[in-house]
Image (cartoon, rainbow, N blue to C red):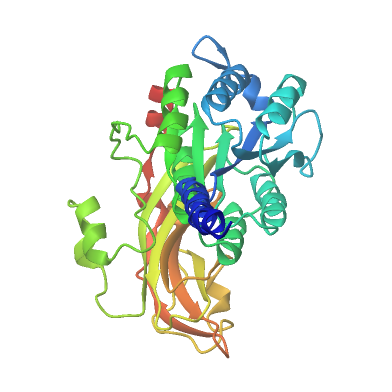
Length: 381
């Protein structure tokens, strides 16, 4: 009797050991994907012999079918015959075995409406606050924000709450000047940008996101590289070894400079300017504002850091302010002016840790010196 009990105890221990080993051998957490689908009107346009929407839906479905059934996924879309800029809807919540729900919704999409990327990201941010700290967002879009929102600010809000969230952007047959903006948006969330021109390139992009397999890039010098936020300045120089502007960078900190000006045409055919800038501030825990000041050529530009912005206000006909939550960074603004020949631009960097104050000012640049990228649009469209 006692002998049987003695043998039973080691067997129980062995069973518990094997059970615990098998449990810990399984992955502790499945991957999580939130799709954002552009269902705006322009997704009706043709790409590679068919509509952009058809390419997007077919490749999404094919990709989803290759994933493990238990993969956590969800779907948000904008447009889809809903007018105005409040068209973002959560069509399938983020959940395990979510593929069946997503594929059931796909036949219901019809491309019509605007492109409210910022409001869509705001909706996604609210959904991700509840227990999904490492979700990968996949934005599939054929254009940029069309509702005057700020997608950069919204993705920064998501990153502050969920630092491990990444957003990858698939740009379907996007205009070259708009491709820059989508690439910048992906870089702000530590994600990647993938240009999509046909079914095969979309398949490769989705596969690369899931497997990490690299796609051989087709380098285009007209699209700037946006390094990861944690890369230091030496690494940035390795990415762009030839930089004709590097000698103009002020080695002192803080600084702000205008790095490039481009003249482009938007989807309506109207001419506008993209003004690119970069900055570095003094304080790690301070919010920064890049203030772009547009002056008539005959006006007097600021030559010293002003104590108050009202100084020399008569020489400024337009200002654009962009808020940043990082000590260093880069960005751009868009402006339409009737006559760029008579307009110059400069930039100021403001810190807002206590009392807002201007801490750096850039050199003046002229819009008339902008490089036109219209020819690139004609080549790639």
